[in-house]
Image 1 (tube, rainbow, N blue to C red):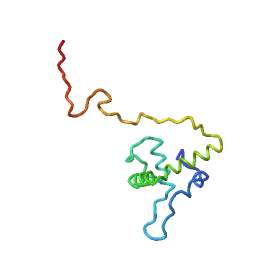
Image 2: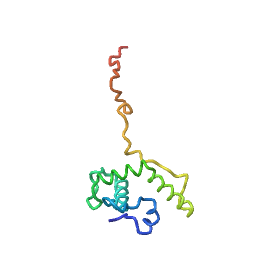
Image 3: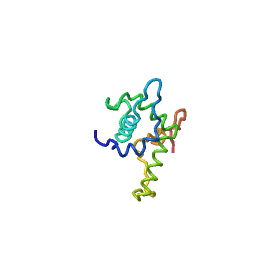
Image 4: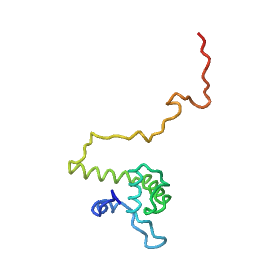
Length: 124
């Protein structure tokens, strides 16, 4: 698939992921899970639309939530920012958030809130 991590890129961040336990059920390959998360983030597709070659979407979603809550994803971003900064390939003044996926509340569009009744009759 296009846009996969190269072996060199994976080796750069591999140490941050938990190693499989010697006993019990084998862990899902963290590289495959991370690739799946990148695919979801890149495409903006719903979790349920994850291609089958990445495994079960529930497993990927579980790991995404766990890694986000544990700070692993933030650590990954920080590590990569440091590396790119040292290579002078990162512009620290350029940051943006894509607001096209942020859902606005009804009241933001003038629809009002539940339970609030406006006076609909305006008399001069």
